[in-house]
Image 1 (cartoon, chains in turn orange, blue):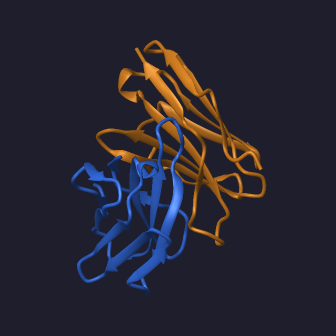
Image 2 (cartoon, helix red, strand yellow):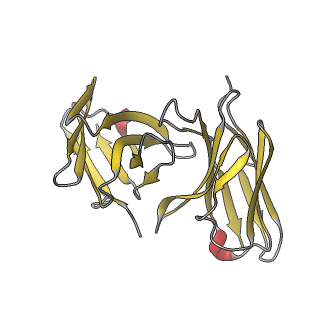
Length: 114
Length: 112
């Protein structure tokens, strides 16, 4: 299996622009997570899907952030409008709910908002 | 509020010596603990875990110790190798679910 695939690897955008991050989880995994990594806060959970349904979005910083999972093999995280403080590495991870606590992470998207 | 805390953000150690990483948690409901390793430009990868019914778990050069009364766990790497140079994240969960709370990470540098 190719593992969790994220795109793009790097994104540079200007403040106010819309940013869309994409994730393809491992086939057969039914849980998907979006994390954000910053120096100050480490790895923060933003939102968690189980069987394509958002279960907990309490980590989403504000209304500018939204996430969707239209099917079992694709998810997006959108920031609109983006701000410089959104600059971070965004990770997608997947796992099998109820079988393992291990998460499998993608390589991340390095986002820079100028 | 950080429920999983990793202090001493960086550690340098000579090759062959022991690396010890510490992690404290505040949520007494946590019952499963994991360590992840992260290389630059890659995602974190699972390293080792421990259930709260144990106080030690060993896998090759890596051993995790859990002290429930102190809400503290540690990761020992012995002997340390240059390839161990990475950021190590401590994580915890409740009730065996896979919604993990992570610490900020510790940078380990192993000097050849």
